[in-house]
Image (cartoon, rainbow, N blue to C red; front, side):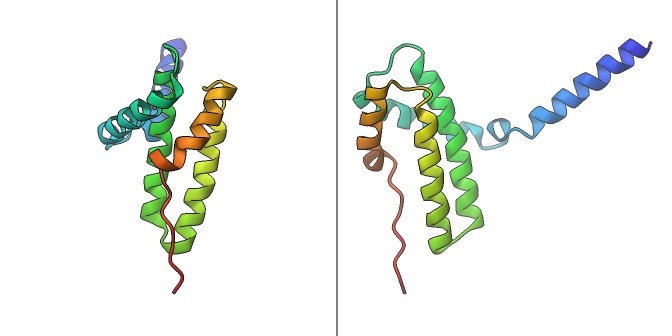
Length: 122
């Protein structure tokens, strides 16, 4: 009986952990569609192999969710600074997915595909 109770508690804890995952929260389909379009656009320049697009797309979804949270929580220069830091982090993490040559090309085309807005000084 103890084993069954322990097993059920582990299952419930695991479910609770996944419920907190930003990837599985509502709005995921919208981010999935955006990520698919972004991945497709990058692939025109990067010529990814058969495994890279799925990994790339998943990473893009993660950062789209983070980007949206920043846009909802901050304004003006603070928002832009946080978006810039997030963009740099995204580039670093893409280095785990892309080859060195692909990463160089990714950096070249990133601002065309995923530009960061510019704040105007008042």
